[in-house]
Length: 259
Image (cartoon, rainbow, N blue to C red; front, side, top):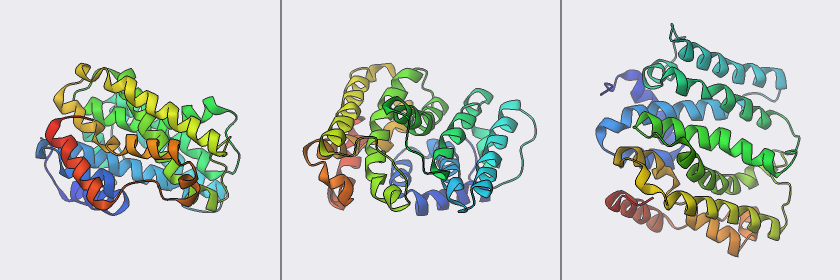
């Protein structure tokens, strides 16, 4: 088990402040699984913030490139630059998993500019390279071996997360949806629900420990069902359930092992 040193404590603090939902899922899993998850989720936060570090595209590009370089260093198996996130991350990720950082960083470049996605496939690819790669990193670190299954589940989670992020992205002058009509939003949400259904039908392929990495998707189905039935909630920024239902749902998932 990786010891909780100052770096990992800083990672946990970062996740608690910047990604409270994922923090809640980490605190719900056995202690031995928390260290790798905190390192991976802290990395994800730092990478996700990189494109927004400056309104100057060149500076934002440099921040994203910094993380691409980190991925190359970890994948190469040599020394890795000192940072409170990179140091524990290098202890957690295998060279193969570190290889996914480059695609994750490339996807995050979309946030720097204001161009729409070329087509629906491009949006799906973006979700896969961000949410899909993140969930696969976490699940593989905890023992998962079926990447396609994890990524299928992650797609549904990613669509739910994307729909919740729409108001912020629009406020930042981004174009997050090719079809922002009620029917277009409902159709996208339905693809997410179908992905969740397909993945859950194959849950027996994942070990109990690997399932812990899928806990961040505990709200996805409820959010997607809301988007299908009431697509206007996307623009309103009102997707989601009450704090009580959110916590109760997480407790249920943890206690039953259902995801």
